[in-house]
Amino acid sequence: MAGVLEKTKEPAIRIEDLWKVYAKNDQDIDVENEDLITELDKSEESVVAVRDLSLTVDPGKVFVVMGLSGSGKSTLIRCIIRLINPTAGKIDIFGQDITKMDKKSLTRFRREQVAMVFQHYGLLPHRTVLQNVLFGLKVKGVNTLDSKERAEVALERVGLTGWENYYPSSLSGGMRQRVGIARAIVMDSPILLMDEPFSGLDPLIRREMQDELIRLQEEMHKTIFFITHDLDEAMRLGDKMAVMKNGNIVQQGSPEEILSDPADEYVARFVQDIRKRIELADKRDSKIESLDIGNKKDKSEQEGKITNVS
Amino acid sequence: MFPEVLEFHVAGYVNDFIDWLLQTYAPVFDSISDGIFTVLNTVHMVISAIPWWGYIILIAVLAWFVSRKILGTIVLALMPVIIGMFGLWDLAIDTLAVIFTAVFFSLLIGIPTGILMAEVKGVRGFLKPVLDGMQTMPSFVYLIPAMMLFGLGKVPAVIATLIYSMPPVIRLTDFGIRQVPKATQEAALAYGCTKWQLLKEVRVPLAMPSIMAGVNQTTMMALAMVVICSMIGARGLGQEVLLSINRIDVGHGFESGFSIVILAIVIDRLTQGFARRWDPNKK
Image (cartoon, rainbow over all chains, first blue to last red; front, side):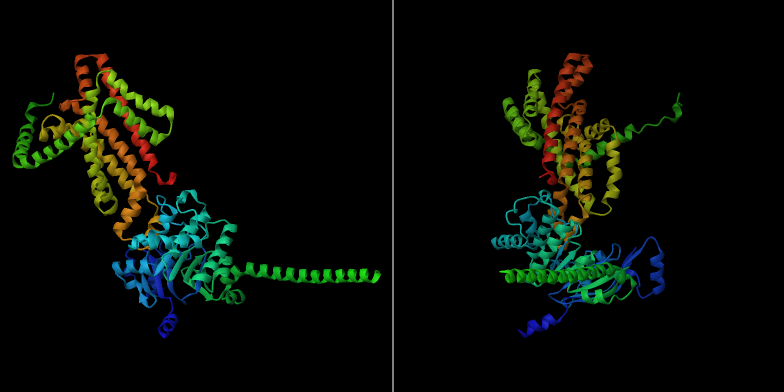
């Protein structure tokens, strides 16, 4: 038990001084050299996507990174699973530095520690829903009756029971993403990476999927690293969130902290809308309340009158 | 007039070189020749064992499977009857045997080459000009090396045909694999695919429609070439056309030419139908 507790103290993901520069031979770039970085920024052939970024994600929590397109958030999440190799820096997952992993241990890490959900689903069109959910297990070499059962359970969790034998092309966007989520949770890996999973869905479905994710998280208690460009989404889902701009984090904290105390003008401009809406809602609430009280008064007065008459 | 002094012949050297090649590597050419001959004979044995009405049924079943259209199926299935009515059935079987054998080897070599082209850096840079060259060369030209190295008859016909018909399947395999969406591959990698698993589970299956289009094109090119191969003595429908030209027998030429057209239509419809069936997005 003590061992488990000690383990939970360790951050699930710890990123330190991470850099990613898209340029030729980016592994050789010395990121300490400020002149070189300014030069790379100016150059049209290179992009500094992530600059000197550090963050910590506690286990069992939902960490949301919010930023506009081009802020480097997609690059960041791909660095965590090494779909993109970072230029410099350290990424510790449960104390293991994944930037130093060789091919073999990287494959093992991907199979056992993380599962990812993509904006464009990334489902296999020639496989059925069930086969898509089983994909990760198949790749891993787990192929037992048990794995099929696990897939059924995962599909049930995302509300897709009965759709096992359909092909992705006959599913709606929301349902496809449910398959994507089922494929991720069936792996039973402690970390879930979600790259704008709901951005392609229409607002109603998006909301529904967010609710579902919250419900799933209550059952699963996974470490979720979630990327979005939607502030509402970030506020709803995140235990902690970070606002990203130009490859770096402008502010991190709980949604409440960011809402009440934006670190700079950039963040302030973001939260402005939400604050206005909350103010409006507050006003409306108090108005309704006062109306309600008024109504009740009227009613009781009327009732009183009636009783008086009788 | 070109001055006679400047005349210079290489014919003698070429002949010497070929003689030397044939003598030095006789076992190699013999075993290639034997291998192709064995396959060709087997194919011929199998397809000539099927009775004519067997083909009608077979084509009807396949056509129905790929198209689900009654009229199209009936028309396609009855077309070969015309070949039989012209008295060219056996020759058509000969031609088919050469086509099938050539396509078999074409795909056997072409598909892996296409995969290699897409997978291994540098292979495309080397193969692309070669393929371009192969496709711009007039089909006639392939008869020369085939005949020089393997003599006359069906075996050089198969070789010339397979070389001529290979480029499309190589190109379309390469193209198909390269156009597999990056998002799908990324997802597969994120779940811990090895490079081999990525190829087997994602890249090749998703390239299948394109590969099947390549199979169709290769088959059609093989058909075109097989007719030309009559010039190096391959028996079949092409030879009938060639004879008709030599004898200025327009009527017979029409019959054999029309039979070739029928073969082409039937093969094209069927292979294209299969290519369409294979498209995962249409499931």
